[in-house]
Image (cartoon, rainbow, N blue to C red; front, side, top):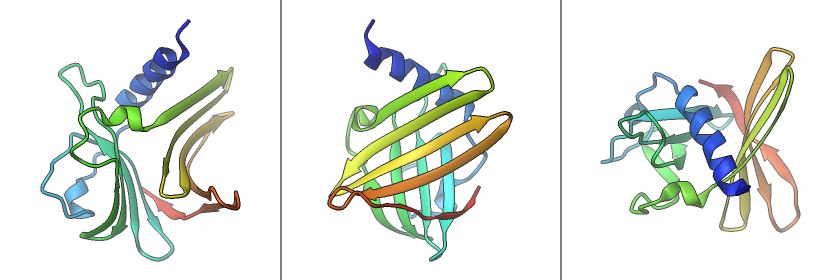
Length: 147
């Protein structure tokens, strides 16, 4: 079995159902418009973090991007908005058993590893974003308010 295809299939399924009615242009200055915002949070410093992308006619994800920065001042966009197949810039891990599921969407950029964690245990859902320095392997969680 090709595990990359399996993980991609799980990600497509997850992203198809996990979307929020948020207008991304309210948070990030961009000349681009995107179909779905999958994750948006505010940090303790008043910055915003978002995971978003476009979908095809069947409502399946065809692109995925990460942005970080102050309202209307984007500091980081990963990968570049010009990238044709941005889904390949991310890694996905999924695990489930009865009453439990874990989804991790990860990417590395400039010495940091970013992991969006969506977990459900016994009906309790938790969504967070961890940023780990690759140099000293210390993880930080920045989101104080998840939308």
